Image 1 (cartoon, one colour):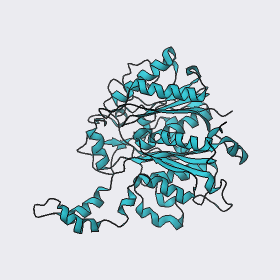
Image 2: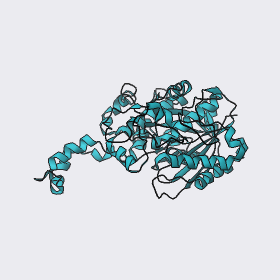
Image 3: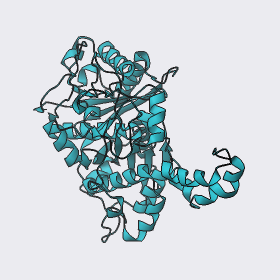
Image 4: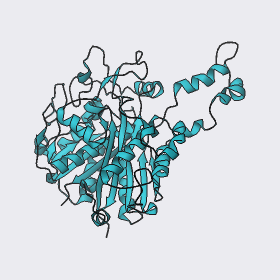
Amino acid sequence: MTRRVVISGAGPISALGVGIDDTWSAMQEGRSGLRPITCFDPGSFPCHVGGQIDDEMFKVRSVVPKSYRKAVKVMCRDVNLAVGAAVAAIEDAGLKTPGVDNEDGHVIEPDRMGCQIGSGLIAADVQELTNAFITSLGEDEEVDLARWGVTGMENLTPLWLLKYLPNMLACHVTIVHDCQGPSNTITCAESSSALSLGESMRVIERGAADACLTGGAESKLNPLSYYRQTCAGRLADSSGLDVQDVVRPFSTEANGTALGEGGGLLVLEAKDNCDARGGRARAELLGYAATQSCDHDGMSATAEDIAAAMRNALLSAGLEESSIDAIVPLGCGIPAVDSAEAETIEAVFGDRAASIPQVLTVPFTGNCNAGNGAIQIAVACRCLETQSLPARLNTGTIDRDLQVGPADAAPAELSNMLVLSASQGGQNTAVILGKVS
């Protein structure tokens, strides 16, 4: 016997805003958050467009307790995003923690609250490194490693490394909200969020916790991360394109993705616990599975392996393919990845594939990598809760018999939804969410 697991709170954070209400409103209106990048000069890179979060939209100091604000100095951008998403998710779930109005005490005891968060390979701040490297130059104006060891490293703050460890997202979130249950960090690119959700689901099912904060967050809007994605051939060429034309999932004109910063945290909770405290379940987590593709070229997606994840998720949910009413694919605009996803959907659903609505998030937020799956899942929860679908942005020519072209927001009868991800590195995930009965 295992416990039923529900999602009782959703806290996405992206260029669309902070929280599920901002995200949903923008997607209902068909309003993308993509725009020209200003946080660094992208001039030497092919893509000049991304999902950048405005400073006025989100400041981490405004969402941490006064007693913890000194710690902001050792938080990188990715940590900031996770901390902000955690507050949004906790507030949406109606919980109280030391980080969110805790005057009446814990709603869930600290040792019964876990935390599993997906993270990326965090890049160091270029300016911090520059300030250290410049003191390490030799007579040839190149970095001298001997000088680096003697003087260069002294120009980095003593706690510099702690800003950039992937587990720091979960570390700060658990401290702020006093989560003393099982904790973990998973770093598997675009599949990180869903893998973390799967871990949280297992933790709750086996009774090791009553609730978990789960999801992921990442920002690749910095020169080092951008360079890596350029070398991997994953970025779109935005030359001569309008902003809304850069990300074109499943399109014959698609030539890559645009990156975003963001992600989201979710509150996963045992249904019996959620009911007992008077919480409101947004969706039930019915099935989950993961598979691995061999990654030879950095594109890391094969229809066979994605289909295996999908079928295993259906098996774990006890559902047939005919039970799925809508799909949230990665749909990132990278032709090889999109093609594998499309082949998977067509192979698994057969003639039904053309009639199943698809929900696309990347044209709205950019590809938020480790945090992308959390955005997909949060949006799927709102679809099930409101019995409606958001608008779909896509300006390309579609030669697949799938519902991935442009569409307005519309009501829909939704019982079960499938969320897919195929990550750089080869990890594939499939999550099945159901309307709460």
